[in-house]
Length: 227
Image (cartoon, rainbow, N blue to C red):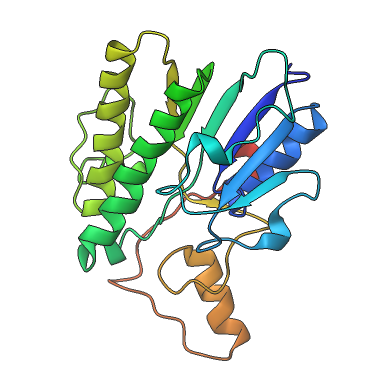
């Protein structure tokens, strides 16, 4: 579908970002990847990616080597914003850190996209945006976040909507992955990825914790299907 395109992927060392990079590279995209390695592995980053190890809060247009990829038009075709400190539970105890990373980090990348006149901004949100409403969720549902992480994700979407009005050339799409798992997942994170947490505990010979009455259900999405 896409050929000879140039893309920026934030969070490229994570599960979704790295899988997306591999798929786009097969479709002849040239990829610039950004990650601070706080929630991913450098080994996940494909070798042909121009990798920038930096926090999304600190990235500027001077970090993006556009000319080395497209000296004629100096245009980036798409930004895939996957980077996030996806610690929903932790956000209750550290709302400042999580909100700054999610909200301010995304705004910095969106501002970068506007500066670079990027053709399309793809924002990766979270099912946490829906919060305390009855599943299965629909796009038309009124969201009711129950923690700072979910609220920050929802506020990002509202801000992107506003930016698209202020800057009509700024086009964006929000996608909402849910319970994504697969190869490349961080297995040492004690705060997220329930499959990885339970696998890690089992490997270490430790007890597995089931909260509540054990009647909770999860429907996992394989990362390849998500991408």
